[in-house]
Length: 203
Length: 203
Image (cartoon, rainbow over all chains, first blue to last red; front, top):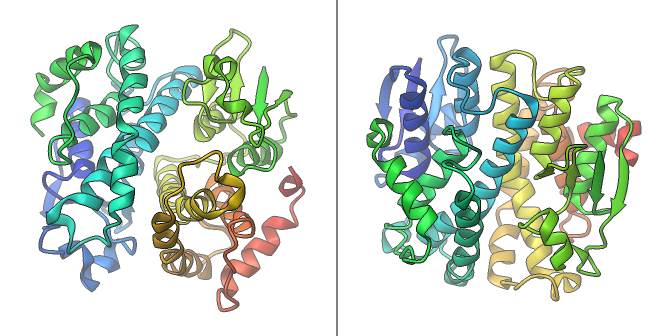
């Protein structure tokens, strides 16, 4: 297998952390330089017509794009530890939180970055009004996350799941998006400190 | 079980179509009137703090929100027909296409509706510039979908999957979003006509 990787961007990091939490060695890495627009070349569009990283190319040549599709494939091959949940109910609750984060905090933080950061001006048709609208939503999204983390060590109980990876990466990505994490979110701070100390988080 | 439903909105429809394609009878339905802002009441926020429909409440009281979490839960209880794929590779390809559609065409069509339709002015902080940016992306997203459908009956082969449900609902929702489907997308038209003729599509 070969992993077309995108360095520090949030989705490539989610996949590498997932590998590390599974205890699976990374496959051959093909670096894709997003800043140099390598993901927008005709060569890369033949691998992923949606022109996004990461992409996992299987040994039979199948190109598997989309972060969560790659992670689910790895979970299918290596069921333990079950980062997507082991029973239908636990799997559904993890999916619910993963999506709440992805469609909420993760989407807003990445929208602020894409639509306001000077380094993205060449890569994105920036809509400053959309950056601002998302910036204004972040506090409510953090409140929802903090409330959930008040009740348990991780988002869906005492074990880490893929929802924690998505949420932790969203918090990390607030820094390049230039959004401060308010002091008051004590549960987020406790949980994020624990995440950041895991060996996987260096991925 | 009880399903808090939202009528003709795209996500409630996806869940009802999923039930129908699985051959599972619908549970008790609790209608939620989005136009009357019932999903924004404090009572509803106790069921789903993210204030979205649909929500499936299990017999033990667990409130399961997020369309795909509900569908995956149903797939866990009733594995056949496998609308999320039966092998790790097929499941990953279906997840890839479902996400390409959800993060692409589905997201753009719903953004156009939410940020430009007069009926949404009271429900959404509308950003007209974001509606326009999304309107401008739809043609490329339709091209990607049409190309994929040129090669097979459904998005991921000869059998319907959850990715077809998401994509078909996105096409349906172009009408209220006031986006025309250009004549040239013959594969989309053929596939969408077949979807629309299925009994599930009346859900």
